[in-house]
Length: 487
Image (cartoon, rainbow, N blue to C red; front, top):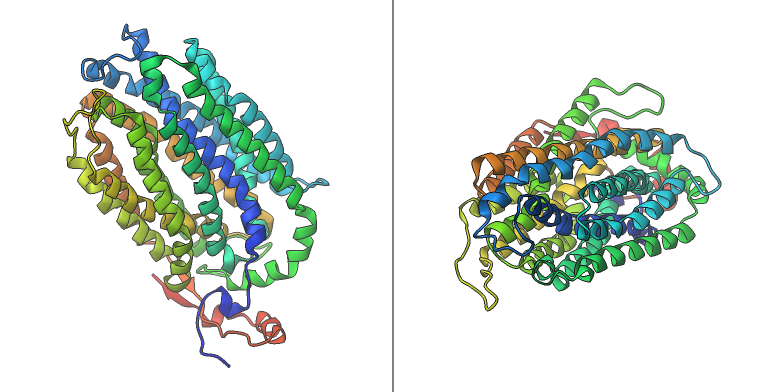
């Protein structure tokens, strides 16, 4: 018998990497769309509302700073309204998909319909903006977000549906890595087709092309997923592994199929969701307003902000798998805490940075090189947080309620993304200080890390099975007696 150690390998589990990569394509489309959405929608709304106050498109941000700041509150409300609808719908789609049974599976119908409608509607956002149709643009943004929520919940739930609990941290690392490739593609579009070029030239194709490319790639990856993943067949094949995985969950109390949730597990769920709301509020504030922060405060080209965002995405991409392995050694709670600490300390210097005042050849300022280091460290921390947070939530439920608990996870994130644009938009408008953005995000990350310190979870110590028969016999034993708490 080999030396006792912890982790999925110790319990005799093996991750199917090929299938996990295919499932991850759904998340590729999600992050691709959101990156394009955040890169362009916020500055488009800012210019649209500024034009309503008599500021021409392409006007110098330094000469109209007061106007651009004053409309951030309205921009924040618009960016949040769609998320409010999603906050309500996410748990509904989660429960519906749990109870759905079709020839193509329980998640796939929602993935297909959500992708189709979102992809068709997405390119109309910049088109309606170009014709100064604020009502139409905002309505189209709402349609995209709502149907993306129909798609997002079941798409994300597909991984825990087909992955035993001990492997979900590592699998989620792969899911997020592939997803962030979508984010990198979206960021690349922002670099090569910068919004500031549209402000200077008025060429509609500069903003229309990224939306069209995102729609085409979403449909392509969704079709590939549909033809490669036979949901019903895989669910039957994975049933024994899934059942055995229940015995090795990283929870305080054992999760039983038809029993009510225990008090200790319920407290863990609430604390994780509260921390999640806080860290998403902090991070989404940056996501939503970083383009405006760069264009209208730092006075840099939008391509410079896209490059910094690319650094964050690349750092996250390489850190996702690392986060999964670290979690297997020290637990998901402490991996998340480390990630939040990295984000906190990386954002702290941003609170004191301002425009460089060094002009480029076209009149914009250069971006302070410190921002690239800030984004790189924050990207590593964000990867650690995202690798472990979703598995921590679905760890607390049985296989019958994966969609429901996925709904809880995304309801918390959408609650944060509904609140934070309004809150930080109001702060920016009433304080008339762009520095409030990094201060706001830094503070929320610090509070979120403190909440995570109160979360309880358990670590399992098991022996490495030397044979398949030994692994099978180990599955019959309850590992709960060997659990050790990590507070």
